[in-house]
Image 1 (cartoon, rainbow, N blue to C red):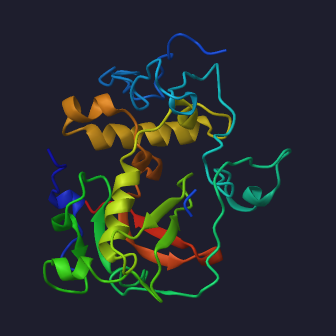
Image 2 (image 1 turned 135 degrees about the horizontal axis):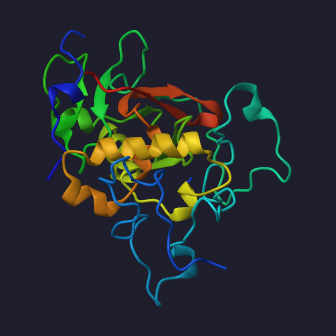
Length: 271
């Protein structure tokens, strides 16, 4: 069942590719409400169980507040939860990452349907909705429902087969690949952002030395809010990457970033 958009989730009309414990400790920081309405570890919690045939790199990992992982190496190296100038202070050993860096030397322009304008955002899309459905997207400057031609528009000019997206609060890159040989389209951007944001996490992505209790609490609250209307289906999947956005889950467009990458701009849901 697709997450339903209510009036509280819509904008008003007025407006490249790149020794463990036997159980996971239950904590108020992992899916538990104060009244115990959410189980601390339910149905795998971090993306399902692994079997003997599962490669080591894909197996689940078991951590808790007493057994924190080091900074996950699949996070982008420039991600930091430390605010302001503290984020630029180098750490001993650096931020080790296995993510392949990317630099686009060509200056490209993003399609107007995706070009972020703080005074007049071009799009309203609640990234918590799944699976991706074009009907959930509002192109605010079109003053009409979107159609397939809108989503088939090339996202960049000059066109390209790959683009990389990031968000300051999101520890992963989002890599967008063309689905057709003519280049990345608007639909590719939106559908592939949605696909990654609804990927499950591993225990090391939540219980690690990089995140503090405030960050884990914000992620947990976002999880609880997201599953509130469909607990039976959504709780077993556990925390998803989209929960790292906290309350700022509405996608409003892309802005030019460093090294030819594109920054996601998001905001809180309308109430």
